[in-house]
Image (cartoon, rainbow, N blue to C red; front, side, top):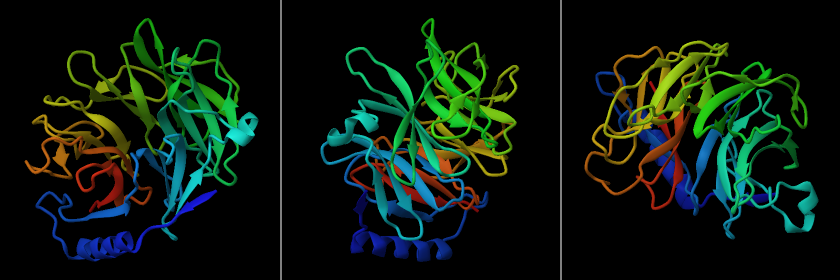
Length: 326
């Protein structure tokens, strides 16, 4: 394990913005204004961050100093970052190997494991799911049904289902399959297709009854929901100007937060009722940073108080920040 310590500068910023969050006002819709707290000022690009089920950790993908991709975990109490070393040349038979690209990350409901979606070949892409022990960093490949090269793993809140996206006939769609918990997770059923007109990057609602996901049937990527048991999809977002991406449910399932900019500028955080309605803006760059990617890869904390996200807007690199929700 490699421990990466926060610098005194970052600790100062954290304390400063925590105090500022108590003093800042909210607008008339209750949207946070000056309540952005930096927690990971990392040298390299951070992606696919996810809160642990107990809300005490955040896992994320990032490259090491040699640009090998790894999973890192930020600890809320100690503010340390632990690297789960997935690629170790001296122990290649017990590790995932070289990761050429990552496509998702999620926790198991017990908080003991992380599921990773990776591309392990660069010339002819091969997509696989691997399970990583949070305790010791050991890895196991999850054996998927034949012909299923999956992206975007998501385990249901009760731990009984795994959803993922696969590409068939040039179209990505969402599937689910029954699983048995353990190391590794065991597939115990046949795959069930949930979407038929496109869909990827799904997220379970906290009560396990809904899935929200992305699709781009015409122009931009929009957010849809579907019953976890299947059925017709419901379109939630309709805005233009830019894709609507990286969705996350609030703990009470009343809201979906996501990345968007109706004017085509850098991505900002927005939220919308999970049944559809009027979007509300959470973060706002205005015209200050017109050339950056903006706020991405958001995840709502289990207690509902914070949304964690990666951003280029407050740092020269993709660092991780929290925005307070009230």
